[in-house]
Amino acid sequence: MVENQHASDHALEVFERTERRELRPRAGNGPTDEDRSYRVVPTGTGFVRVLVAENGRPVSAADYRKGMLELQKALEDVLDSNNPRAHDDFAKRDRRTRERTTLIDAVREAYIVTSIGTELRDGHTLQKFRLEPNPAYRPKTRTMEFMSHTRATIWVEEKSASLAQIGGEVVSDVSFGAGIGKVYRGATLFMRQQEVQPGVWLPEYYQTDYTARKLFFVSETHERITTVNYRRIGPPAEALAEIKRELKVAADPR
Image 1 (cartoon, rainbow, N blue to C red):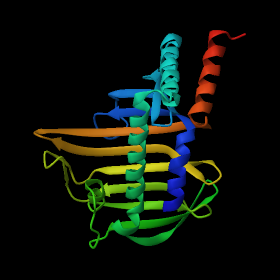
Image 2: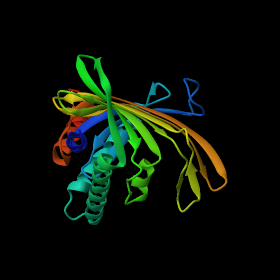
Image 3: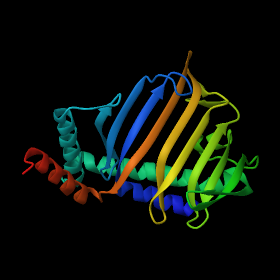
């Protein structure tokens, strides 16, 4: 599962998607502080989010075109060998990739894993596992240390050995920023993935609910991200050609 998750993370770099991000002042289905939908396109060094709707209403054609032109410029900058920022952006991407790879690899050591049965869902057989913090685990980074404060349940699709779903809970307070901040016990995370092509599973729903303190200020965060419309758009050169084609068609529908 760990190795297949690495492959799926890599595949995310060539798939575009539509994300709806909702922020609420409290848990549940109450009113939102923010409700925005974005077209998310990989650029080779990260992602550009083009706003497509806000509070359920599509943005104007002019605003959407502006966002698409900014996306085109970002892709052109990545592909420009004379762009001094491109080298730094690729270096940052490589560092983020290494950090995520190391973090996912650490799951093997950070938890004691117990099989707790199987479930059938949408024609898939899912193996279910309980992950409890391993008291013998010695984290190497602050991010890895976070694992020592969490427990989780994961669902693994049997045929492809891919992560289909995870639900996690913070079981003890986690300090960060040299003690100036804290995430409190009881925080939860839930993520569900979908198979976008054979053997490639990518996120379709993500929810976090937590209370945190930074200096003397305590705040709650309740976030939901729903993802649809996965489509392979390719590496930067292919993505740029597609974006240019779309802009040309929009400018001259004939």
